[in-house]
Structure formats: structure tokens, C-alpha cells
Image 1 (cartoon, rainbow, N blue to C red):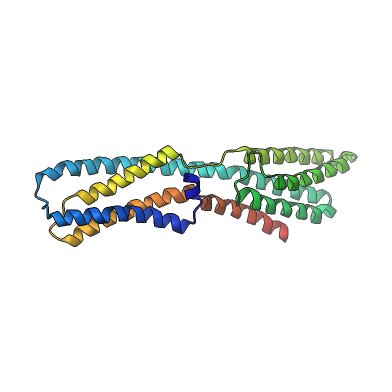
Image 2 (cartoon, rainbow, N blue to C red):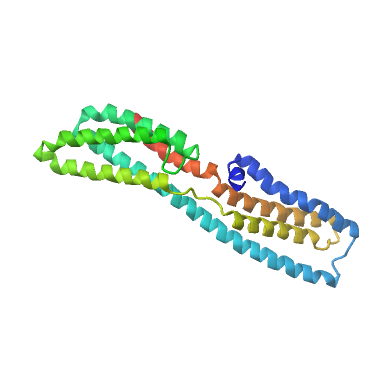
Length: 261
């Protein structure tokens, strides 16, 4: 359920995150205003203390969640960065040894990057990667094997051939590392607790007694509700597919532009 929510368009996530707190507090504020309770009542001191405790708990948990979710997302993007960096290096090395390989390697690389983009970034690929991307990747590896064989008979290029082989092995490792990693996601239990604290925060503000001017009560309560909705939106956005896919597509696009020249 949480994964389905995070896969929604970002505008819809924003609308839900802000709309739910606002919808909850509006009838509560209206009920408080209708009771005509004044701020002088000593019985509200306990409610103020509860609001302070809940608000502090929510802020601490929120900071913890944002830092950890952002760190998880950054860590999840590193494997693709490592793979594209190694791929760029080995393709350039291969082309320097045999310029005739340049158009072939460019074509194989662009086909692979296109497959990665379609089947492993835009879609949730199975563990081990999508088979279509794997086929495109194996064609690149086969080209490296052909290059290695062509260099083995030349003693002057033996050391360069060894470099190509090692980097090709590193490329295989980088892809295996990327496709075997679990995708970073927001923990369901942590999210549930965070959402409950968020709703309790806006609800406790809504229950506070009304000041002498009604509009101040509305500004006070709606301001907190919208602020809580916005910070929850930030959590959901960092955890969403839109955030992770944006960074991954940027990495792939940069490499594609390089090989399209």
C-alpha cells in the first residue's frame, strides 16, 4: 500500500498530504469556536503541555526519518553511478585500442542504457535485473572478450589488455551489485507512527481554546496543518519513485549524450 502511494504523481502526494490534515482540523476548529470557550480557562494548560510533547516528538521523529530516508536514497543511487562511470571508462579504453570498434561500442552502449532506463529504472525490475537489459549488457561484455583476444597476441599491448579485462570485470561486478540491491523504501511502521504523530499534532492545535478573534484561531490551526502536510510531503517525495528516477535518469542521460556525439 505504501509503495503504491509513493508511486503516485507528486502533485497528488502533495494534495493528499496537505488535504488530510486540513480536512481533519476544519470541523474541530469550527466546533471549538462554537463552544465559545475563552483562553482564560485553566483547564487548557494540560492540553498545551500535550501539544508541546506531541509536537516535539513529531519533530524529532521527522528529522530522524528525513535524514535516514535521504541517506538511503543516496546510497541506492551510488551503484548506478559506479556502473556508468566504469562503463564510460572501459568503452573509451576499448575505442582507443581499436577505433573501428567505436561505432559498434557506441551502439551497444546506447542500447544497454536504453534498456536500463526502460526496464530497470522506470519499472521495478526483479532481483537480478531485467532479462532484456541483461542481454544488452552481455553484448557489451562479448565485445570486450573479442578485444581481449585481439590484444593477447601483441606483447606491446599486453598490459593495456590486462587493464581492459580488469575494468570489464569491475563493470560486471557493478551491474551485479546494482541489480541485486533491494530498493530503498520508507519503512511502513515508521511511516505509520510519523503519520499518527502528525495528525495528533494538528488535532491538538485545533483543540486549543480560541483567542478573542476567530480569524487568529483559523490562521493558527490551518498554518500548523499546512506546515505538517508540507513536511510530510517532503518525506514522501524523497522516498518516491519520482525522486529516485529523476537522479538515475540524469546519470543515464549524461552518458547517452556523451556517446551520441
